[in-house]
Length: 83
Image (cartoon, rainbow, N blue to C red; front, side, top):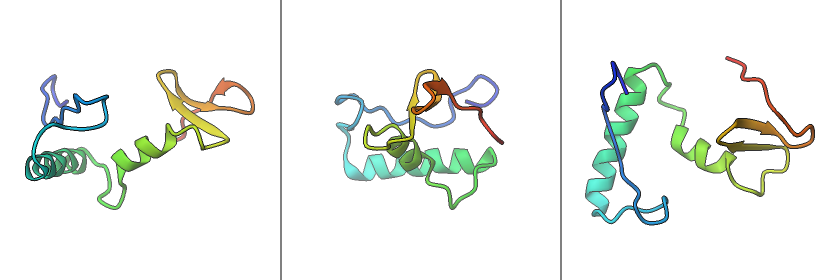
């Protein structure tokens, strides 16, 4: 969102993981999402969507990403965000 407006979107209605749209349509929408991130200062070499998908996997033993934020599993606490 920018100034309260959605600037790019890709709906994933199938289990929150997959689209019912064509591959071409999904690719175009992913490009629009990445362009919007770049316009807001996210570096091109950061695969933010893959990073978010990876960090939430249960096979990552030390950190988890959930609705509370990044969780330090060993300490059972929300990890501080460092920017």
